[in-house]
Image (cartoon, rainbow, N blue to C red; front, side, top):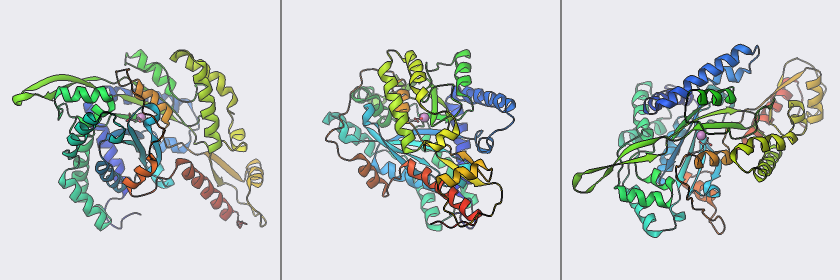
Amino acid sequence: TTPARGVDADTLRTRFVQRLSDMYRDEVPLYGDLVDIVASVDASVLASKSQTPSDLLTRHQLERHGAIRLGTAQEMRLISRLFRIMGMYPVGYYDLQIVGFPLHGTAFRPISEQSLSANPFRVFTTVLRPSLIASPTVRKMAESTLSSRQLFSSRLIELMDGVETAGLMPEGNVTEFISEALKIFKWHSKSTVSLSTYESLLREHPMVADIVCFPSAHINHLTPRTLDIDAVQEEMVRRGLPAKECIEGPPAGRKCEILLRQTSFKALEERVIFVGGDDECVDGTHTARFGEVEQRGAAVTKKGRELYDRLLVSAIGMKETERDMVEALKETFVEYPDDWETLRKQDLVFFRYKVVKSECIPNFKLDTVRMEELIQTGVVECQPITYEDFLPLSAAGIFTSNLGDDDRKLYKTNGMADGRAELEAVLGQQIPCETSLYEELQSDSVKQCEEALGLKRI
Ligand code: OOG
Ligand code: NI
């Protein structure tokens, strides 16, 4: 709900992302190059199109997602309070055990149609699960290092308490609030541990080292959205950015984009100073931060996701090298319908419906058959709903290409406690599944059509 006076959550989020993006551009100049590439690619796409979906025009220039990795349940609880103040709520559960990481998480993002169109900024947020660290020594090392970390300044917590009590953020506090919040996401080149501790944690898993050894939860990438990811990929290669070989997600060449496609440039090896004995410092490096770009398509239904997963899995079965994957995907995805009408009639994609011609219709139930008739006669128009979430499998590809190291342990999933329930307990709320939110957006739009046409739901 919008506070009576003060700055509303959508405005706050937009101002925060702008400063986060500026900060990351300073920290990782290649991110700045990527943003420039996206701006020029998108400008030429827009110039070549007479008709652009309106949500892209209003959203795409400022649209970003980021990712952070947290160390403790307490940090997760605090971050969910911080994001809530900026109008972002947990959506979807991602268990990264399937890709061999001792982490799980959720995406914090706006939920309502209005907030999404104001600024859809989202943060993929994971948290370490110490119970999955096999070595008791390493587990203790991680836990004791994290227990003394203060990600949130006391001033930030004071400001958060204030907003939660008053229900609004006074304009006069915004700049300070954002500055204090940015400290959580900032990169620090000075580790809080010794090189040997770092190395022990790294041997357990590179993610564990990345999470535990630094005083902040540095943002590990910030991702602009583009209108043409194939062109961005080409341009990255042309400019000599260390681009990943292939674009993840659905294959190129579809007329109807679904879910999302992502590519990235590889993580930088960065200089880090470790704590030595007798106040001395030891030089080392750390590899974690990278740049990523994405192209978003339509949200798919449960049935649409099952088809996607099945075709992806069979492509994985066919390929021998990463390059072959592109060909394999093209082959298997022939089965995925590629026109909006079929995608709608087969219930594979979510749509937003809108009455565009006033018409008086007798008391009728607006079922799918009736809806199709209204679309055919031009009374109703529909637009696919944009996918706002993440692809765990795509994330896996990006994760593994950015850790520098290949001896990866696999965490067994059998016999594990229910991770979702564990994370929900930490957050103190249920985590809605993304599909149910798209379903709601779709059925709300159907209800609005019914009202506009004077129909009653039967
Ligand atoms: C998160 C990776 C997930 C994406 O775009 O799929 C992600 C991480 O590296 O911590 O951002
Ligand atoms: Ni990402």
